[in-house]
Image 1 (cartoon, helix red, strand yellow):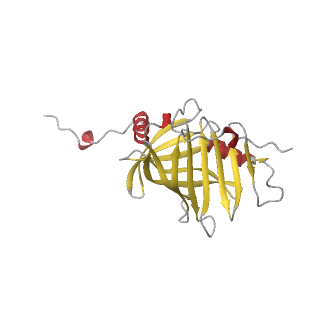
Image 2 (cartoon, rainbow, N blue to C red; image 1 turned 180 degrees about the vertical axis):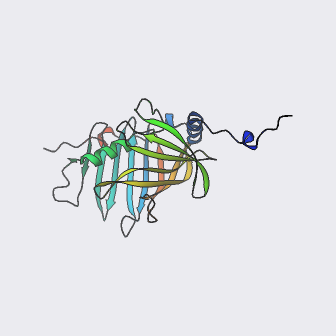
Image 3 (cartoon, rainbow, N blue to C red; image 1 turned 30 degrees about the vertical axis):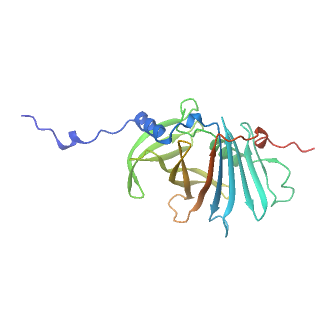
Length: 233
């Protein structure tokens, strides 16, 4: 009589495609969302919470308005170029292009569906990097390589298949460094799951900045001019 080894009864390793499918199912009908507006608070960047409004539309338009002591700093991407206005620097209210590193980071972030959707068409390579744990809970790690060669790792919770952690290059004080982004408090908004809390910090560091979502609107009307760089005469 043949006796099966203990390992033969172990759960087989999931395939990359099965994880992507389960993640998409967990997120909900994201493809039906054409625009979104998130009203948030930045906690830990200043002695007080900073109101932040992020607007985004397909395919890759994004605008961020941060209010600091009554003045609004704007960064935006119109699908081709990134620009900003900054009331805290001389002449900063005149719209100006973002520096190259910041412009690329914003363009990457503006990808409406995120890097796990349509990766092949975007020139992104994904690979299953094996089982892992995040904050003591089982997870699955996915390796990500962008078309420009930059690498990241995304962890999906093994039970919910929602993203719980991401490690990627990030711009910190004008220099590219490795940062960790922890996502939690997922809530259903019109059938789509949206993380209502993110914690961001240097990889391995204990100190993190928090982003808390106070309100999320999907398929909200956003004037396309909001993303375009204003013309100054």
